[in-house]
Amino acid sequence: MLTLTRLTLKDLPPDERPRERLYKHGADVLKISELLAIIIRHGSKEKTALEVSEDLLNRFSGNLNRIARATVRELTCHGIGQAKAAQLIAAFELGKRLSSFSESEKPSINSPEDAARLLMSEMRYYKKEVFKVLLLDTKNRLIKIETISSGILDASLVHPREVFYSAIQEMASSLILVHNHPSGNISPSAQDIEITKNMLQAGKIMNIEVVDHIIIGDGRFLSLKEKKFI
Image (cartoon, rainbow, N blue to C red):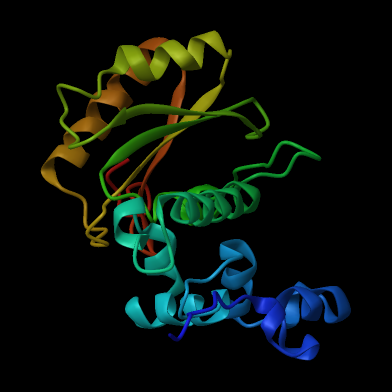
């Protein structure tokens, strides 16, 4: 009777094992499938972790962005259970957060590009609309990023009191509104424009300037200030 043996990366020649290649050459020379294999660690009874990683890439048409946006359920397949799927999601999330912040100094936000760059790597992958506020000091340095709402944006749900409560608590001099369009279409909706007008009016009363409202799509953004809505 033939007994199936669980294949591991140790069954590969040393110069083909992703972890050993990382030790010897550094992570930047590894292929995406090799990096995924190091996170996945173990394969199935039929395939090594490297083969499982290659299958995963093929399932998402080689698109790493789609893998980074996938849920546990979407990642789970033969060779990748819920625990491994969670490890992958955690790894991608750490990458997103690392690319968004610098601990050495508070980033200055002097243009729509600065604001979009700060949040693009995170918000472009959201599957529902999320409304955030960048709170700035008198020198346009970031004080804090506050999440105001998550879900379908509605002018009645995104209320100035939530936005300006945080701004007052943090003694912000100005703020930038930011939300995403999961569809990738960055054209402002009627709701987006109404929310912007409400915040501008509230900002004048509070003496806290609303500098801009940024809409983030998949790798693209739109500034309502540049489009003359502010």
